[in-house]
Length: 584
Image (cartoon, rainbow, N blue to C red; front, side, top):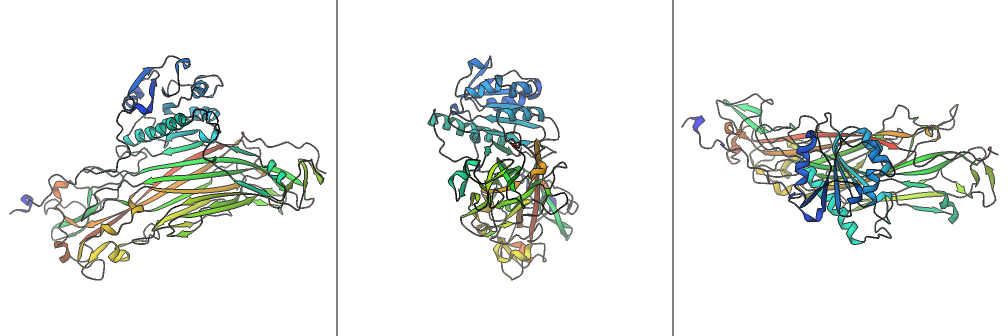
């Protein structure tokens, strides 16, 4: 029989992905009533998809007709900044009625205006959508949140299934919270930045000023149909070795699929910022001097690889490593603290961070403590002590603030890579089992050994039988939640700034492995370049692969995906006090 007619050649390619369901995105009465503003042609396709989530829809008339249980959807091209920032304008009145606002097409001007409504960190760039969820009566601003998609290079308004799922999940949680206790006289959960302030004098903690801000939640677009800003993983076949007029093929590590449905991880990053006021203690006089702001950020990440195709000869893609990095990214920011310099330098400096390094712990809580410039006790002018330009203070006491965070990471490990000198908060979480991942290219077939493949021999390239998918641990192919926190003192040299720019980078690594497949003799393709039509690829036969030369019986590939989120944190909600008297 001619090779081109060989019945073992695949005709339909890989089966569709059996993706774990986030939401079926079916109409749901619990989402409330959708109140629809007027839309231009640009946003109508996205609006049509959003509308499919709701059972009841009505056109928007005015804010007086809004009621609890409604969701207001607006066209970002027709919304003005004044609509969002005005104290008695559209957005403020909608939130007063406990109505979330969904804006399709969200640019920097609208986000800056929305910050007046929900003060939080801003994400620079155009987003396809933003969901503004208000705090309810009895809640502080930490209960409010802004959900938006990653910034896009273009200004095309799109709506994907994963975006719809995120919108649905956020609205269901909001409505459940609203309906469970309409008055909400007290929050069940502590606000972000909740801390235990300790001091040898109970009155000292009264002077620890704190401004809690709203939550910013950023989601990936999660679509391989876009050339800009996507983090999908191809399941197309690509040649990696040749022999006997054929090529051996495994997965490509590209982000875009041509023939076979891609696997698109679903990732979300949450930021909860808090501002504190601190003072420096003058080294000579021991008096309060030079107030400054402390920036505290809680970060959590939800990371779902959306693994599918778990079967005898391949496992699709599973996550093996994630790295997070948050650093100053502002040319106007003075960095570093050096009292001995001439003139003295009091700039941006690291105070504390978590999590710390931990290896394979099932659950671990990290606590951090930072002092308000250490050995500082406030008397606020109500008790004796030395006078200063900012009140009355004495040495001999201390004020410290403590935070904690918890992670559950069975079979994974966390590495704290924070650069405290340069104020860079960084940590890395890596798969510890079934094989260690020590770097971007640190794991290879030989290092995996019998953890990944089942052998008749001792070396990884010797006589593979099949991929041991049973050894891949749950956290590598299910949703992982990671929590962290960090605190920095901006320093008095940066008091003049109204905002500070930060850059958050999230990098993820995914692995895939399987038994080699052969191409047809007449359709070999080009090594490492072509993505082959599945009809030119023979089906897997792991048993026959036992006789293949070393390096040709199995394939292993790693893909790296990186997301950069530019953040701007407004500082004006916590004013720097002016001196009330000349320093003594």
